[in-house]
Image (cartoon, rainbow, N blue to C red; front, side, top):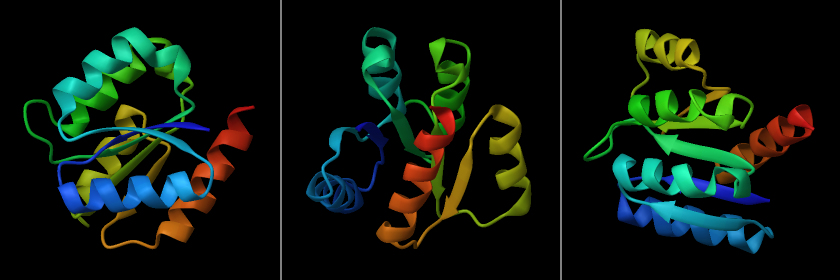
Length: 123
């Protein structure tokens, strides 16, 4: 499964990428929303699922979600990871089109199960 991972925390980006690759996933990672959106413009048909943080430099996670949902990404599974546990933030990202909302810290194994569930649901 081809995964786009957008996370500005370098340690989390690397460790989560390593974990997903160890489970057989292909991971393309970016540390900011702008680079991720530019990548999606040219490669969205190559991605199976997007995982994004909300608090990103240059373009926030909300912008990434909006950009994705106005393109072919209408049906692309999208998981939001964030340190914000505020209910209004969670409701906002669901209104923007997120499929899942996971608060940090989180279990990579639980993230993996949610990813698998979303991709099967999309098929």
